[in-house]
Amino acid sequence: MASLAGKTLFITGASRGIGKAIALRAAADGANIILAAKTAEPHPKLPGTIYTAAEEIEAAGGQALPCVVDVRDEATVEAAMKQGVERFGGLDILVNNASAIMLTPTLHTPMKRFDLMHQVNTRGTFLCSQKALPHLLKAANPHILNISPPLNLNPGWFAGHVAYTMAKYGMSMCVLGMAREFKGKVGVNALWPRTAIDTSAVRNLLGGDGMAKKSRTPEIMADAAHAVLCRPHGDCTGNFFIDDEVLTAEGVTDLDQYSVMPGTTDFAPDFFLD
Image (cartoon, rainbow, N blue to C red; front, side, top):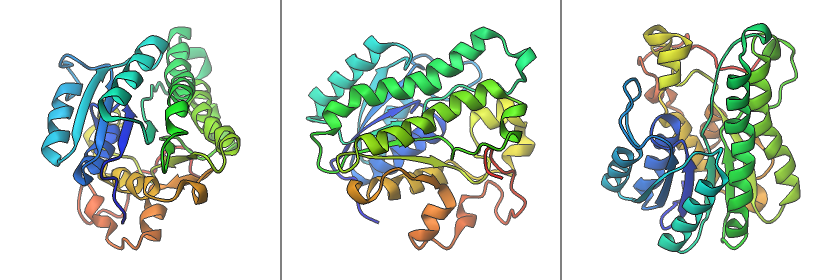
């Protein structure tokens, strides 16, 4: 694979999980990482802060700029973007990873949670993209990568959690529109896992340790993201990538390395993939 050495990435939700894994993979190349996340103080139930993540990134070989960012807040997004560009001299890549989830049916979804999911997922992705684009348009190989699913209109993926599906698909609709709008100028793609990924959301919200054992590690998403972000932006845009398909295309044959439990074949599938 090619390298992200010297590239500057702005990654939302990068203090843990998939976002941190993507940051660490880029850091191994010698990339600069602007860590945009809310967790500045240790959380009682969730591991890591932007500062502990920054330490790991620098230990991995990258440079880190931890920024306390709420992707719902335009001012903090702008400030972090400005600080990162001043520190590293530009911006090459935006990874829209921050996401909120609540898997409840219509009658059991408080509007406060509906608003949170739409503000973080759809609005946050649009906002960060809008603020990053003036900088990305100056970069040599600029990319936006949204951690969001293919647009699958099977009603089964809506019925149990309409609010979450709408909010998550909003991120994917940003890919659909911006890829065409900025074709030839910025590569805009989505990446989604085939299986459940062992994150705090899986352990705390979706199935606990039992589902975690039937999941893959965040590193499969990190390696797939790395492969996409190294591709020429002009030839790589408007795609809804699946992690294992990306790696297979790159010649990776040992996917068992990403299994939480080596030898697992009965993985828990992720949402939105029939």
